[in-house]
Length: 128
Image (cartoon, rainbow, N blue to C red; front, side):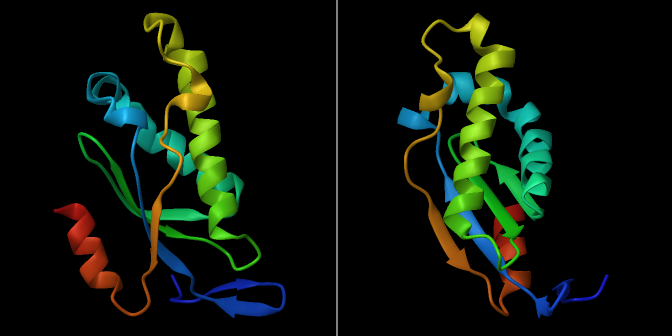
């Protein structure tokens, strides 16, 4: 694929390294759900015309390299992914855990950094 993506009147390459955590780093609950989250994140990102290029679900946090079109704010896409994934997890897996409430699964903030020309290094960091 071409290095640059395009919208109707623009060429763009906007990639971000994003890290966020479950609320209170709920390792026991999060571990059980990790294998399902990758597909959920990819589906939600595609609904905002974004692509997760690289991702890794660590035992207590999420790393992803995501390409977001310039017509969307990073906070809008990440908020959407975190919010909708929490709702999905509450609906599908919430019956098993009494203390799991959808809107409180992810911690409030996140880390984001623009990738720029260091994409290879960021991809390697996320993989390992």
